[in-house]
Length: 285
Image 1 (cartoon, helix red, strand yellow):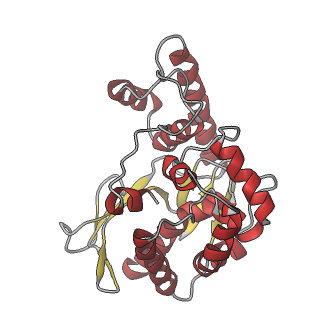
Image 2: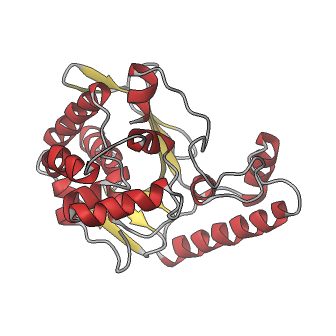
Image 3: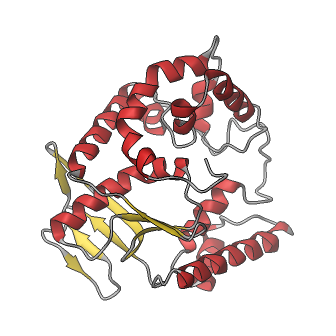
């Protein structure tokens, strides 16, 4: 959705420009930024990471800064404790796909460097981080929205594991749930091709298939989905996707029903395997 608005519509939004409850200064970390920093801190020395955050000026200002630091430190320690309980090596690593690499190699820290993944005459480059031998490590509970968010990463990881015989399980390791969930693929290339088809479709059409909405589009009634959208637009429910809010601006009629009718078939085609295979923890969505 962000790529559509930026590349096709030429719209670049500043952070939380459309959020009615945003304030001028960063007094407290909102849920999104806290989650981003918590994810960054996985498998690192917290003190060193804190110095990096302070140099980047991403932490709150004034008297709220110590509160946020203490909260992040506690969450970082909790994640470390969960990794210990699950017998996960806290030294996490990453995979880098780049045209600079002609063959597979690994450094002394366990980081892998691979050539681009080729599929449908396309070369996929980028990184998959927070990896351990059991899969991708996530410092949150397992939920439908997290499954959606991580789906392309697990598809690419499965392809790489099979192609290069990497010592990694193609699984999602949810620390807060103390649960590792593996998905078995006969051939994940078909699933990845389907996802790429959706990606190019979404470059031409603003797609509402974002992690926060896909479960509602698939499983909620139009009335319930409409209430959820209204709560997010009005700022009653924490919601951090400004491009999604832009999509909802000035919409008339039963927009929730239109989204379900137009996009549910795509959602079923793209995400049915992961949502039918994995089950979120009770209370997660």
